[in-house]
Amino acid sequence: MSEVVIRAEGLGKKYFIGHQSSNESYVSLRDVVARTVEGFVRSAKDMYNGRQLINGDEVEEFWALKDINFEVKRGDVVGIIGRNGAGKSTLLKILSRITEPSTGRVVLDGRVASLLEVGTGFHPELSGRENIYLNGAILGMRRAEIKRKFDEIVAFAEIDKFLDTPVKRYSSGMYVRLAFAVAAHLEPEILVVDEVLAVGDVEFQRKCLDKMKDVAGGGRTVLFVSHSMPAVRALCQSSILLARGSLQCFDRTASVIEAYLQNNDANHCTIVWDEHSAPGDDTCRLRGVSVTQEGASDVLLSSKTVCINFEVVISKLERDLNIGFYMSGPDMSTLWWSHHSDDSPEFWPKLTIGKNILTCLLPAGLLNTGRYWIAPCISNHGRRWIVNMPPTICFDAILDHGRSPYWTSLSDGRRQGQLAPIFTWKKK
Image (cartoon, rainbow, N blue to C red; front, side, top):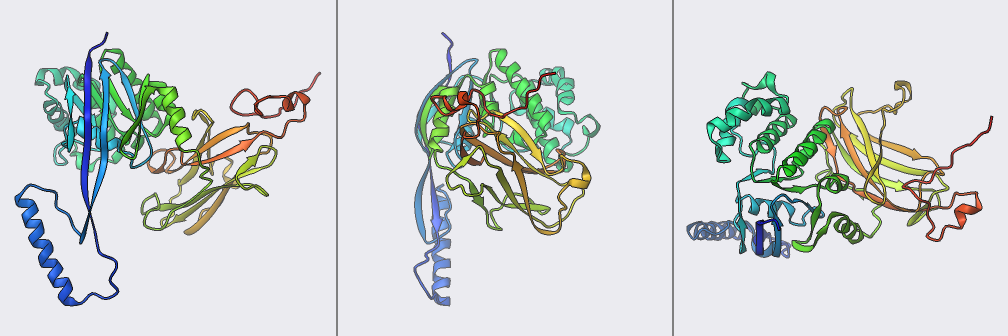
């Protein structure tokens, strides 16, 4: 039996959150000055006693993780999934010894290499070459070991032209390529990877998944956090599902993904963001995505056209701006990608500064019975991700477009396969 290399026992992480009092209609200058003095005294006491500094009049206790127990054996590849705010990144920071737990303990047997944020462990003033040696030393590698792997790291990261450039001038994609290359090639016993890989382009993400398979094949342990269910399914034999800081289940990946999808059992056909929370950057922001169908309410019919609508606010119009999505089927495998620029240029929807409403029409007679997921994305044709979201919008469809009696005789109301198109057959 394989030995246990990660053991979490009663693991918990507690934070204190400050809130401003909002039940007063009028606040005088005297009150403001008094509260400022009180806040300064309280902060000084907290700093002296080594406690967390909190701003605000009211303090709330928040458990990012609570009573987490699990074991991971050597050579296992374990996925960690859950909705935003479930506690995934907090767990990885504790396992990477970045954050101390409030309760419980973690026992690690082996050297840990972590890739949690873009540029983790890099010094911005040092060059790529110097950061490879620095990061390797932090991971406990001897200089001879780093030198032996140096050429492989540079080749994998594809930054040979910028090897002697300070990393503060790197793009986010170059940062993450080099960071992953160092973490994966310096032979740690435990490799911890967060969703940071989403920063890279599609081809680099594929390279990273292949590399993690190689790492696991060498008997080392991998912990992988991702919102991409196909990636988790392809890479991980078992997975952990977190929800609101608690461990919901730790089982075979297929079972955990099924439980995750069941926990998200409500339709989310429409999501709207305000100007402060809208995903994107100074170039453009995604303000809303919706799935609609004429005459439909909760469940869409496969016999009618489905409209996927995007509201995008553009501040700076770039020539190669590309708006699209990928769709996943009921088992979260990717069915297709679609972009507004897929057709010939003369048929592209013309983007303008300000609000743009784009609609993608899914033809009738395509969908099967089941749940479908949409992951919105905006990029400069893959060179830079502006928006790269996990499957976020979901809707249910019912198969009702079959004309053959064999279709209507299906006991579960669906046809085998992800989709159920009707193709034309001819005889010569």
